[in-house]
Length: 367
Image 1 (cartoon, one colour):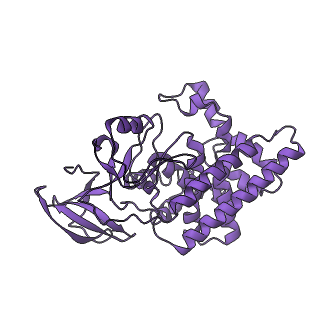
Image 2: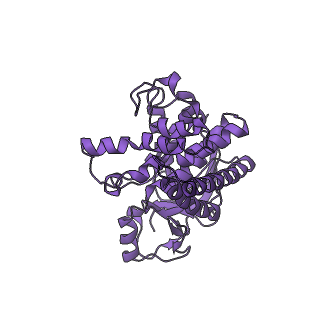
Image 3: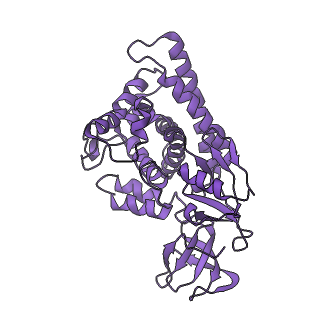
């Protein structure tokens, strides 16, 4: 199978992977032949790409670091848990609210331990494009993605398990303050007004104030919510902290949060591909993000995910069949003149090949 832009999808194309809603329910099953009506609905829900099955990509299987069934179940758990915590009256917390919040925290900790176990066992680079879901609310799916990315980055830092678990809890809760931001602001497709932007930025302190009231949560976890939009050059919010004043947990979550934000479609902009997301992080390393964490993160992500169609510097076109940090295997399907060829595979060394490299992605192939 391979991944293509929704703009290139035509009626009659067969889905290679199911499409889910945010609660994990299958909306379109694997193998569904897409109609014009389905394609229009996917565009309406800001789906920017889908996996398809065709002759070019037959036999290419997508490897996932986190099984799709686990991810869908975890999103439902996070959804309910964040709502339970958000119901806590911060000014006058009651016993019932505190008990619900405590249960939610224990559930989050279990979910994150399962994530850490999966990633510790399978240290493959992460490809979260492999699961296509309709974002009814950006917060829940984003919270899970940030937890997965943060866990991988925390493991790459070699941190002790207790700190990794704290980072996991902080990453799941980092955007809880957004539950108090009006949906019309969160989903506004045009630039925010000054007043709307003020409300948006306030989600950091709102989240921090909620988390501080839950006794089971260590203070550094609350700082993940407070500081994940701080920048190492001091231009972030809410407090304009400089590099040395930002908690290291928040520095890790900031990178994961930024990467997921730009590689997921939003109402006001399309998603970008993983290699473009890494380029964006590198562009802001040392100003917005901690440069050391950005450098580590590059090895955590499948920059060119399986199934992506790419064009090489010599003109040939191929589909990524397998990926590792240092090299990828391409199934060549067109020659240097973009004429079809009998498919064959080559290995591209991403670190040492200077004469052969990728110059274009999401290349259009004849259907």
